[in-house]
Length: 140
Image (tube, rainbow, N blue to C red; front, side):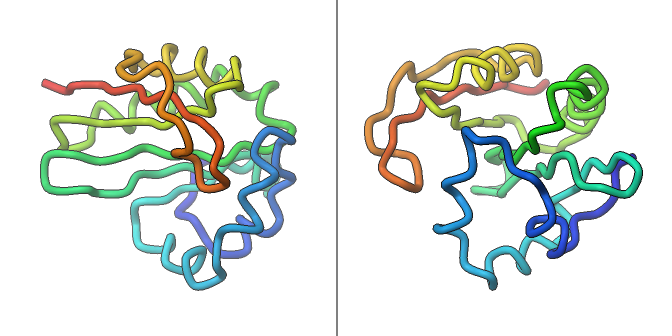
């Protein structure tokens, strides 16, 4: 079930180990700001399994993001279908996705969502100073 994001979803999500570091960098007011209509939560039996959304850079460009819970791998197929439908409805020409350089599963998911590798390694681009790859998807 997909629902509009609520602040408590972020704090009750059992974040996968690969993304656990983000909690120390996200200020409470930024979590609250995600309740702006561009963030959603994937719930299973009322429990957050993933949160995802996008940030608008300018009218033709947005950056997709997600924070996945430890339970997300068993729901990946359904989450991928939902994400693809959502992406296909977005009004932006260019979508981007930053992927942790060392997290191979995230690279695979970006490709499953129709993104193409554009920048193999952008050093010190993650919120904690880690490296990312940048994937993009150009929409019709």
